[in-house]
Amino acid sequence: MKKVAKALFFFLLMAMVPFSASWAQTEEDTEENAAVTGSKYGADSANCVIHLSLYREFYKQKNYKDAFPHWRWVFNNCPLATMNLYIDGAKMVSSIVDETKDATLKDKYVDTLMMVYDQRIKYFDKEGFVLGRKGIDLITYRTDKTEEIYPIFKKSVELSGNKSEGAVLVYYFRSIINMVELKKLEKAAIVDAYDVISEIIDHNIQANQQKPKALANWENVKANIESTFEPFATCPDLISIYQKKFATKGDDIETLKKITNVLDRRGCNDTELFFQATEKLHTLEPSAQSAYLMGSLYLGKENMSKAATYLQQAANLFEEPENQVRALNLLANIQFNQRSYSQARATAQKILQINPNYGKAYLLIGDLYAASASNCTEDDMGGKTVFWAAVDKYVRARNVDPSVESEANQKIGQYSQHFPAKEDLFFRDMQEGASYTVGCWINETTTIRPAK
Image 1 (cartoon, one colour):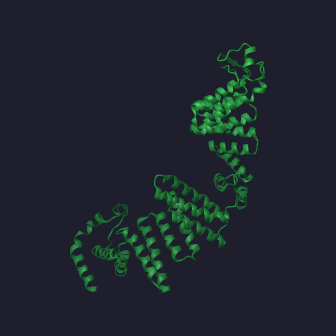
Image 2 (spheres, helix red, strand yellow):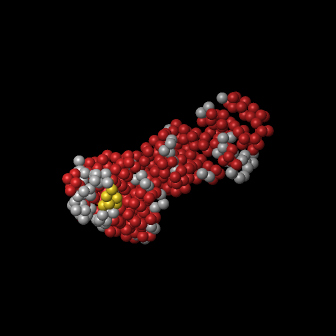
Image 3 (cartoon, rainbow, N blue to C red):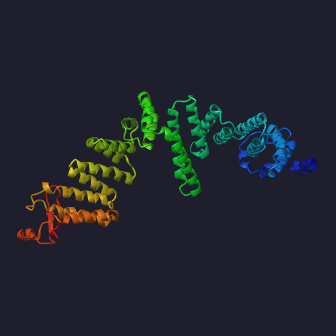
């Protein structure tokens, strides 16, 4: 082996030194090196290229024992040579750590591995990404070093944000729980981290909808985080943690967002704290979504007047047509519930201006008319003519929106039975098929039809 190494050394010395300046053109990380200032090959460029080549040759053969001395020389003497120095180094040193039986020597190799990551950050940056990899290796080889591991993952996630790797998020979350168990962090830190991590995961799940493999990976990460969080996720626990924060930082928008996000994610949105935090957030930072949410919450409390006020705000603030329709539809149903029939119809008509094919709006108007029958009796037929106008709306709903066809047909069958009888039409000299204007508040022209 020594003869082979000497021969290879001599060959490289003769053949490669004259071309050392062109090394960067053959490296995978040319672009990365381009951003780094300083001499790539240090004061002794000839030896740097030789040792670099030797370590790479042995490394490719997975002969880490012979590669390591040459790699270490490059690491110490020309750290700017190539980012592959650190990618290869991490893999090689990890392998050596795994194979080393002596505990003291093994620990020294782990120190070397940490140095690889630190020096990579120093010369090639990408701090967030590299810290994540450093943290994973540290937690692998020194599982008991929670206080050392936690800040590495924390900074990695803070720097990388939505670009954080899934494994880093999983280990970061576990390190926070370990810190809480050591009483180095408050329990609230788990909940706060869950909120941040969940948003990153949701972003990546959405971004990878067309990439099945990546999507499956992120969904697995989500499941891992959810199962890890489960013991801390009961509504009483969350309320206990966040009630204190709300009491002391109830005017801080970011705190309010965390409270509402986490409580909503965990299905605790029927709690008084969620209601109070959401209302305060809407006061400090009103938005269409917060107005809609407040309307929904007041609806749950059966405060129809407040619910209607917030939903009207939401409808005015929303820019997307589908969201405007969503808010107006809920508002119209509240107005119906309050027996404000004329207002409810006006709201339904606004919906149809936005989306003429929204069948539910026609169904609602039909229901408004049908509900008015007992109050619209000036037709001399006990309000039965109102059902003509109601059925017209159900037919219209069915014609423009196939999704409501079944419901429309059911209502048509139900209310057609309430049409005036043939003899009632005969005695009033009303001809089947002729036009007829329904009075009361409805004021719509319809067609005379007998009950069947």
